[in-house]
Length: 323
Image 1 (tube, rainbow, N blue to C red):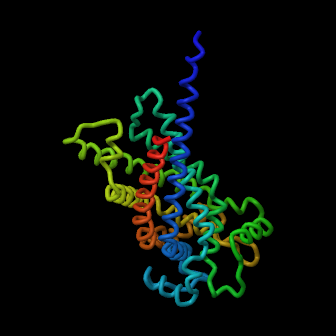
Image 2: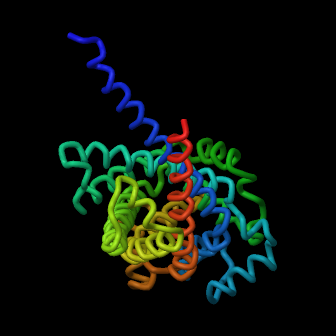
Image 3: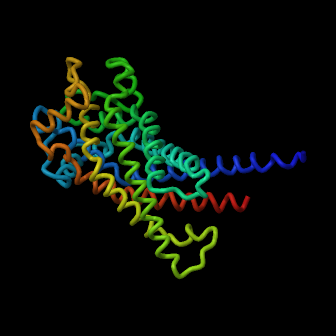
C-alpha cells in the first residue's frame, strides 16, 4: 500500500478546522461591533422588562426616548453603558461560539448530503449551537442584567463591576445563582437562534438564486453575488422574525435574574412563577415590555453583525488562499 494514500484525510481535517476557527473569529468580531454600537438600548430594554408596575427600585419611564434621556440626565454616560463589560465579553464569546458550533453542526449534518442542508437541518444546527452557547454564557448575562439594573435610587452600589458581581453572587447566593434564568435562556437561545439562522439561510439562498439567474455560476459565485446591503437586509429580516416569536422568554429570564431582596428571597421563584404573575397582573402586554428598544437595538444590530461577520469571513478566506 502506498504511503501517500492516507495523506488527504489529515489535510481535509486541517482545512475544516481552519474554516471553523475563521467562523469563530468572524462571529466574535461581529459580536463586539454589535454591542459597542447598541448598548444603551440594551440597558433601556432590560429596565423595561423587569418593571412589572408594582414594587420597583427603578425609575418610571414613559417610553424609550424618555428612558434614554432620564438615564443620561441622572446617571450620565456611565448609566447608559451599565453592564458594558459583561455585555462585550458575553456578546463576543457568544457570537464566536455560536458561529463555531453552528458551522460544526452544519458540517456534521451535511455529510452524505452533497453539502446542501434542508431548512430542518439548518434549524437543528442553530438549535444545537444555541443550547451550547447558553450553557457557557448564562453567568455573564446574569451579571450584565444586574449591573444594568443598578440606579441612583439604590443607597449603595451593589456591585462595582464584573468581577465583584461574580464574587458577591457566589458568596451570598451560591454557584447555582449564576444559572438563574437558564431554563428560559435555553428556550430563548435555541428557538431564537434557530428561527433567525433558518430564516437567514433560506432568504440568503433566495437572493443568491435570484441574482445568479443571468450569471454563470462558479465555485465562489455565492460570496461574490452578495454585498453588505444584502447582508444588512438579511440580518434585519431574520432578526425581526426571531424577536417577535421569542421575546417573552427574554422577559421571563430578565425577571428571574434580578438580585434578591435584602432578606435573600428572590422576587420570582422559577419560570412558571414569572409566567403566572406576569399574566395575572399585566396580561399579554407584560410579556412584551421593552420590545420597542429591543427591536431598535437588535434589528440594526443584526445587520451590523452579519455585515461584519460575512466581510471578516471573506477577508480570512482571502488570506488563507494567499497562504
